[in-house]
Length: 228
Image (cartoon, rainbow, N blue to C red; front, side, top):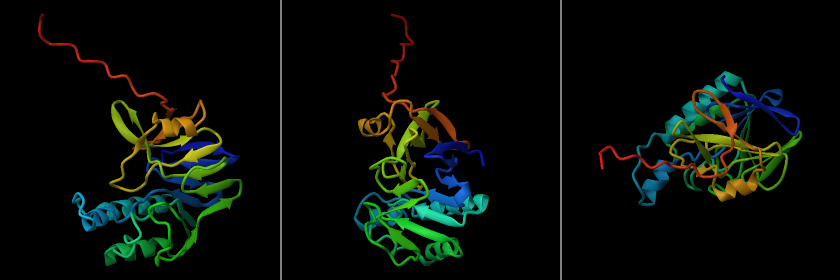
């Protein structure tokens, strides 16, 4: 699985390389900010035209994580759909794919700022939910919590990667969906939310924990290649 195991409020959690969070004892897989239907929403509103494959890419990643973990419960932490109309705009093949993933599992949708109302996709809908010692919500607001919303990202070896952020009292998940941007870890908003000593757990082929950057990286000017 190549995940990184850590503890939050005595719960043993695994940050997966895909950006999903796995809670083995609860058999719960948690993902945030799927933004399903983003390409359709942008086309509908006259924005930039994107290849309409992000929903398929996101569902494929989710399928792989469900198969790898055998999760019995799935919790989506808000902004699962890119706007209120995106769920109804899924093509039939994508809707059926989602239904197959939901079949036989407890599926909880947390409402987000992009999808503040229930859809007709099934499952249950909550503003937030507390399971054991942890509270799950879309936007960080307290302690012993798991949230999303900010799409944190960090650089490693010059490459930007989505990342988890944790400081021992709260956890912020990366955006799971394709075609999602991100907020740099050193942004003042995230610096204010996370205590000193926080970790950024980078996604990719392996989940890699590093100290959370709290300042923008220094870019060295290139030296001139011609003689003066």
